[in-house]
Length: 480
Image (tube, rainbow, N blue to C red; front, side, top):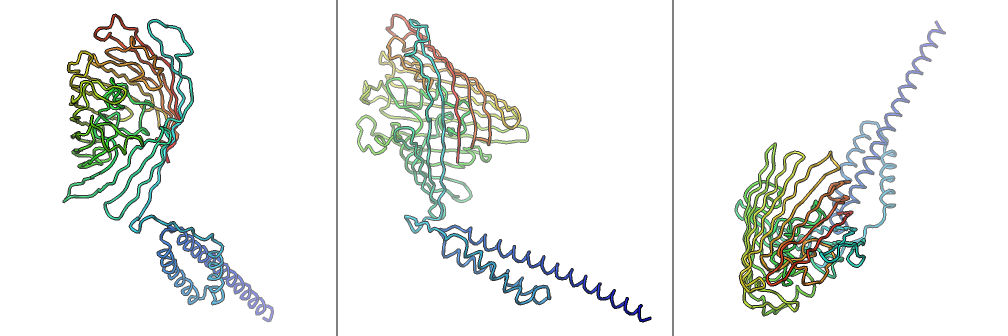
């Protein structure tokens, strides 16, 4: 009986000890959980934006209250002692003290509410050889074989309270030029989404041109697009791309293909193309002091099987016609450009096709001082091969209608022979290549074959020394 009682007491003691051990383990686990929660709350508070230091202190104070309530509850339940709770509070405070001090951000304006920084680096290699009818050899003097930085963009968007923002994007690789620099109001007028910009940006004309360089599938834009968009030089028109003025866009997200629906836009800008520092601050230019007008409209649609963007645009550029000399003057002066554009972008599953047609009536714009009807088109099919690879091809054709074109006008990096006898009526250029999307457009490798050739002798020319260009192009891109 005594032995049985002793065994019973021993058994109860063992059970009591095990229960006590389990309770201790439970208290320790809960303590660790409480400590982790406290550390997490402290870390979250410390991660708040440094520019809002005062708000950070308020949030830290508020976030500690639930933690204190949890500790007090654990004490009341007997899981933790008052000393355990005090030790946990001391540990959290110690971790907070070990965090580096926040560095304040001093804004230039008290109304600044947020900054978004962005950038783009495009490292490119081009190896192209240009020949003409009199020189069919691979003359080293006609070859461009070089690695270079195509773009080095650094941009910032500053939100200035509700609806207002300032946008700047600068290209350090292009001898000091702006990709955009404008003030924007964006919001709803009634139930209609609008954006109004004042400053420098691309106009909504020439789909290939206003497509972001980050999204180009053929590394460079088509010859037709370059002929219409790039600086007027007596051949190219300078009738798209960067202009300074007032811009209005209805449903801009549909225009960008981010949503569906009807979109439209209008702009009133300087007539001449501008982007370089030497151009954007010019206050007087007798050649192009009259404003240009731009209009565009279109529709973005999406179904389970197909997504589509279609658009049209038109523009009137006073005193930008005729033939422009190297000093910027027009001959004859006072001539105008009227132009139009239609495009379609279709995607179905792994397939995509984009096509565009551009046309411009250039008053007294060809060599015999009559109206030149300049036109061009390009078509670009592509197919995705899994999630990473994409094959793409493009064909482009440009007709100058006697105004004149060279391969270097349409094929970037092509060597300019500088011989008047190679100036032709028309240009064909083509590209076939592949894209490897490492992390979408934010990190991708592109490479492909580039080719082009001119055709048709100009008025008064005895013959044409037809130009031909062939070669390879590759590019690595990072967006951040």
